[in-house]
Image (cartoon, rainbow, N blue to C red; front, side, top):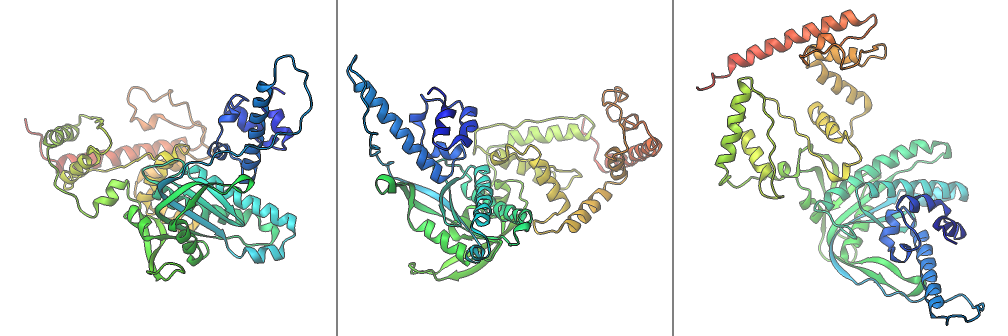
Length: 464
């Protein structure tokens, strides 16, 4: 057998053949695969165990073939017993643990046929696992209808606590959507999420088939599970250490303190409402105060010089680069402080690694900040805020409406724009609304010209 796909089919795991092929995994790579690798490929916990046993059997068979003398007749032999694999070395790690659990799952099992219950549970687990994978977390265990996910192991990030909270909030939203999709089953789905951060020991425990790989030992997962039990349906509850790591990035509502069985001191808990809209972690932490900026006078002078050029009509683009932590964000904040009394519009777009598959997420974030959209806003409230924001743009609002109307069969961009890219009047649809669009463009041009003249009048003359 030379094809991994065929081998997977003999194991009843043919559904993963495409994932193995996409990752260029052949028989020579199989012995090197770890459980973390298989989790990244999308295998469930049970299938990971089955595949690891099969790989171990392949390894044992290959070793037996190499040990057979050359020319010796082949003789059938009983299947090799699975060798006892050495356990993964235990590691002491800082970990953020997410524990999510389905609400009233016992009642669900009493109301549904076992096959329907299996389908609902499968969709629920797949939905949660997809969100965890999106933020590069690791699903450590499926415990009945509970899911235990790790952020900080096996792959660590500088913002694991932030990723964990975003995962919890997105799981709540995803299950709410799934509830609508499963309406035909006559059930209502909701989850509770508990998150805690602290020191743990990660490693394999147990032996043989009962080995628990990548098990997490310590107080942290226990507290996360207790917080989950204390959370209300559809909410996320975090502990004190997690709160300190994301302070300023999320709106938190204090709950507790709570007495938890097995822990002597009461613990603080906080319900996560929504992201604060802070454009960056630096901006969030800066609300607590910053030390004076020292040794950056030359950089600030250069930026202010470019700003004077911009006010006189000479555009500039400035690229500020440097090693992480060297003070780039601090310089930008100092510039903003210097320009606080001058008319300008500040747009902030920060790309985050866990949104690398969402190209327009930075635009969505900026639009939410500008319009004041809140996480809990219903659709009509969101539409009202968006319309109010567009109305403030003056003629541009109508221009956007006309350009994006279904009836507008627009000319190609490279036709008619001419040398002046600001000549919006030349970008016209070839239909009945072209006259209204042209009139709106002219109105927008006058609107912009009035504001330009007003700004020039308010700005001081550039020094010679």
